[in-house]
Length: 64
Image 1 (cartoon, rainbow, N blue to C red):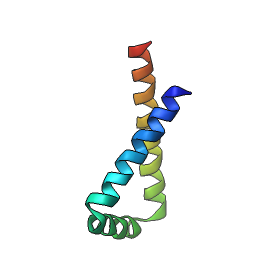
Image 2: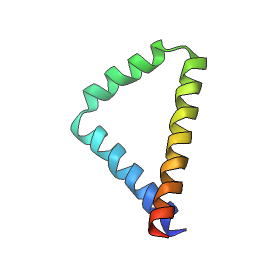
Image 3: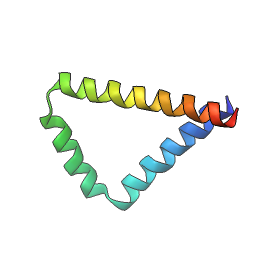
């Protein structure tokens, strides 16, 4: 449970930094993402999800 809270906190810190420091760049990124077909965005999302799960699995193995 602690790992989940730390991960969620990290995401919130990162997202907050992006919104606070570069809001106009975020607009550019959102326009870029809107131009990518939905199926390709799905594949990118699944790849990011898989990478995240693998990184968590490795981190737990190292600390464990």
